[in-house]
Structures are given as C-alpha cells and as structure tokens.
Image 1 (cartoon, rainbow, N blue to C red):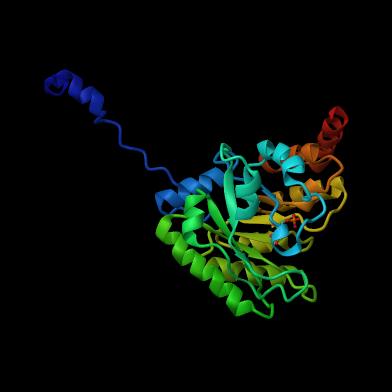
Image 2 (cartoon, rainbow, N blue to C red):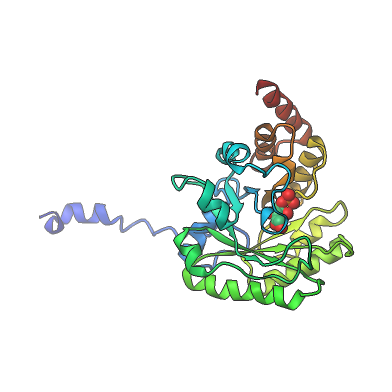
Amino acid sequence: MADLDGAKEAKSFYTDIPQKTEGFFLKGSDSLDWGMKNRLSRIFNPESGRTVMLAVDHGYFQGPTTGLERIDINILPLVKYADTLMLTRGILRSIVPASTTKSIVLRVTGGTSILKELSNEEIAVDIEDSIRLNVCAMAVQVFIGGEYEKQSITNMTRMIDIGTRYGIPTLAVTAVGKDMARDARYFRLATRICAELGAHYIKSYYIEDGFDTVTACCPVPIVIAGGKKISESDALKMAYNAIQQGAGGVDMGRNIFQSECPAAMIQAVRAVVHHNEKPEKAFDLYKTLKNQQ
Ligand code: 5RP
C-alpha cells in the first residue's frame, strides 16, 4: 500500500528536485534522436568526447592491403584497444566474433577497384543488413571534386535518409583524388558540404596549415584518417596536432596496422586522443610497450 502512504510519497517523488535535462556531449548532435545519440556514444567515448576508430576496410577497393592479409591474426588482437572497428560486412561476418561488444562502423559503399575510377561508387549494403549487423554507423565515401562527385554525394544523402529512419548515423568519408590539392580550402569545402547535407560525422585528413579552420567551420565532429604510413613519432604528432586543433578523434588504419608494433601504436594513439598525451610522451609509451612485446 506504499502509494497510499502520504509521508513516503513526497520523498519518493522528489518534488523539490527538477528533473535534469542533459545536453548531448557531441558537437552539433544534440537534436538527434535517442537511438542515434546512443549509437554515437558507443563510437565516441562520452568521457573524453573522442574516438579511436581502427580502420581496416581498405580491402573493399584494394584487396589484401599490407598488414591486412590476415585480419584474424593481425587485427583481432588490436580490437580491444579501439573504441570502434571500421570494416566491411564480409570481414565482419567471416572473421570478427559476434561476441564482440565493440561498436562497428560499416563500410556501405563500394563497387570500384584500384584498377578503375574510384569515385564511381554505389551504395553496396542494404540498410536491412546494417540493422541485422547491429552497426553503430554507416560509412560512405564522398568524392568532392571527383569525376562522380554527384553520384557519391547522392549515395551519402540516400544513406542519411534511410539511416535516419532507423536511428543509424552516417559517417561521410572524404576521399581526395590524386590530382587534387590537399589543403585547408579543399577540406573546408568537402567537410562542410557533407555536414550541410546531413552527415553525422565526417572523416577528413590532417593538414599542417589551417586544419583548425576546417574543424571550426564544420558543425559536426571530424575524425582524421592516418593516410600513408609515416614514422610512428610523426603519426603521433599528427594525431596530437589534429586533436588539439579540434578533431574528435582518429579513424586510423595503416599507421596502426603497418606499424612495427601495432599493439603498442594503437595504445600510444589512445593516449594522445583520450588523454591529450604530448606526442613525445606518447612515443615513449610506444617504445616501452614495443619492448614489452
Ligand atoms: C579507405 C578508408 C580508410 O578507412 C581510411 O583511409 C583510413 O585509413 P588510413 O588511416 O590507412 O588512411 O576509408 O577508403
């Protein structure tokens, strides 16, 4: 008969304490629906507001990339250090144990190879499969300035529309053609177009000059790709600079899985991304962990 007990009632309803309405921690994402926010919170750590995405989807257009020949042997041991795994459904179903609790960002465009024009992509995964696979976001390649620019933008807007129906965010992956300038002007253009058209977060590249202007004028989070393999200390410097200039994390592949010691490298990257570790200290951490292997 607790409901009839007047004295208890005032206490259990906390009538003197207004219910808290918390804002969402992620840039530009507060007005999204609950499911979207929950999925984004499994990609971006709510404590640091950032993410370490381990990107291993390269095979979708270039086959068995160096370091990804045996994902079961080389990549699975790294998964525990990542916040999110970015990959294709083929690798997910054939190699990644379904018991994993890591969030998954699924590559959903494709249809071209390194032997042909890369921008000529289509949507390559049905939304139903993304739902079946319980993914936290869908990754779509966008080729601003590329030959099939419009087609790739339409792939993105289509996935944003369909994903919104089911509460699944879309990651726009800006791809830069070989003959295009990789400068702040280009990345401001590419990332802003993706954000204006509704992408929930965007992958870009770090650039030495003006990266802070790219993050400043993009209304949603930007994560950086690592790009071609560089030295471990340079990759850590790049990650540090990107984070300090407003990046929401990294979506890093080759600079982790092609490292001399991938397990040490991903942990050093984590220190930079989640704990603002200075690159020199993170490199020391890398060396220490490498020596322990
Ligand atoms: C391939 C991709 C990769 O996921 C992306 O390039 C990140 O990997 P890397 O750090 O090796 O550049 O989107 O198209």
